[in-house]
Amino acid sequence: MHTIHSRIKQARTNKGLTQAELAEKLNISITAIQLWENKDETKATAPKRKRLEEVAKILGVTVTWLYTGENLIQTEENPKPTENPSPRDGYKKIMIYNIDLSKNHENTKWVLSEFEEPLLINNNWFKSKNLIPDDLRAMRVKGNSMAPNLENNDIVMINTNDVEPIDGEIYAITYNKHFFIKTNPSNC
Image 1 (cartoon, one colour):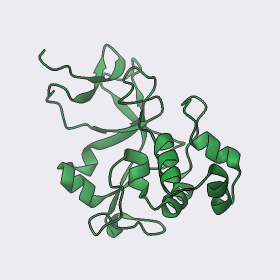
Image 2 (image 1 turned 30 degrees about the vertical axis):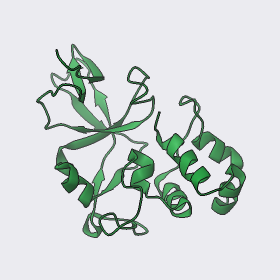
Image 3 (image 1 turned 90 degrees about the horizontal axis):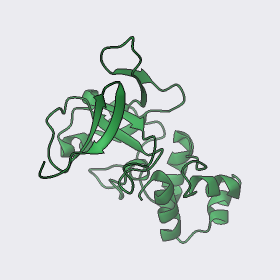
């Protein structure tokens, strides 16, 4: 299980900090740290983007790594983000959506989440994965049917242009007015 919650805890312990010490450095309560690191996803919370940037700086990791588990170390390919990264700084916003599958819509309708700040991803990541940012939608996983690969409340990015199933890959599909994130089993 690798979530933003487990990565915050991992980075904190790797840095040799207790929850109380991290809370003190951030000038917040220890309860906030405990909620961020809670293994029970139904009770866990995640820091807002600005706070997450502070956490990443203190723990010596990148915001991208905290969100996705990739780009742990800040390098020339993965530079330290500025105070408020923008596309001209080498970052692209990936918006977080919900899905509307009501009967009024024949196709999947992506609805911008009112309560989520966008993910800011370094442009080099898109190049390394051969992805086009405008084809991507981020959303939160609901449920644990894909555990341990994906847990409830994890954020996933969906390539809306990738429609060719490959054995063993994870896909988001809409079937019979239901939305699923599942693995395409090998040897079908």
